[in-house]
Structure formats: structure tokens, C-alpha cells
Image (cartoon, rainbow, N blue to C red; front, side):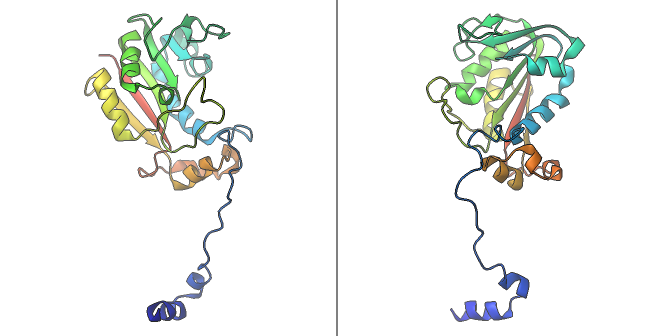
Length: 230
């Protein structure tokens, strides 16, 4: 107690003024990853990852649910874009298949497989990665993203249960097991301020753009995986 009192008397005024606990809002601004407010924060990193590997989006490309990233990052380099969906009534699906079981997936077919924010919804991630490798042609590339720091999606437990969050070490081990050592590389993005904003459901435009320029390896908000079938 004597030390505490002495410290308070001797501490600079700026420190004494900050003795109050930070007043953090008790509720998020959005429970939909900020997409009801604007562009979600994690999409900045997802699209940065795909932009860095746009040269891989070529030839015959497979994407889950819709071909938006195939069209955006592949363009004229794509000879055919396919959409994978297990649902029987998916309007844009060209291949009815299940990445979790491998059912319906053709062998050795695709030059690129874009798989964003999907592996966290699959119970056996290692097996799903093995199925992804099998559907790639030799030399084909998987471009996958997964969540690190994130809240849980609302209202998706029945159809798409949210199961996993990842670390770079864990994802690298899974990828090495499926693709073989040396054929996969994991990249991470995030820092404490962007992670906090994402958890509160803020959208991209509500942050200082400079916040996205610095990555802190202790705060893995989003992970990108580039894995090649040798």
C-alpha cells in the first residue's frame, strides 16, 4: 500500500490521468462480421492474399459457392471456372460435391482451387485437404483462407456448423500431411487493433487504413494457405 501511494504521487501526470480502467463497449457493433456495416475486415486480408497469388488463378479453376474470386483474380487466364457446392439446389453449382467426404469431386482436374473460409466448417480438416489435393491436376494450386481470431457466425449451426479456429503452426502441419513437406506455405495477417475492431464487428471503412499495414505474428486474424500438388 505504501508503495502504491508513493508511485501515485511520483508518477507523471499523464500516467495518473490514465488510472481508470478502459471503458470497452459491452456489446459488439455487429454480429455479422461487420458485413451489415460495410466490407468486413477479414475480407481485406482474404483479397490481399488472393491478389498476391493471382498468377495461380489460371486454367481450369474451382471455387466454392460462386465464382466471384475466379472472375476477379483470374480473368482471361481462366479457361473454365467451376463452382463446387454440395447443396442440390445451389443455383451456380457446376459440380455437386462434398469437400468433407470427397464425394462428387473429380480427380486430377483443376489447375487452381479457391477455398475461402470453408475449412473451419469441416470436422476432419486433414481429410478435406487431402480431397482438395486429389482434385488438383499435377502442379495445381490450392489457395485457401481460414479464420484465426474471430467470433462465431450467427444462425449457421444447423447447415454449416462452425467448428475450428486455426494457428499458423496447426495449419502448416495439416497442409504438410496432405500435400507433403515443402509443398505448402502459410501466411498470416492481423494485429491487435484490427483484431479488436473485427471482434466488435467494425467494417473496413471505420478503421484507419494504416491499421492494415502492420502485421503482428502474435495476433493471427486471418491465415492464407498456398499448397501445390507436386
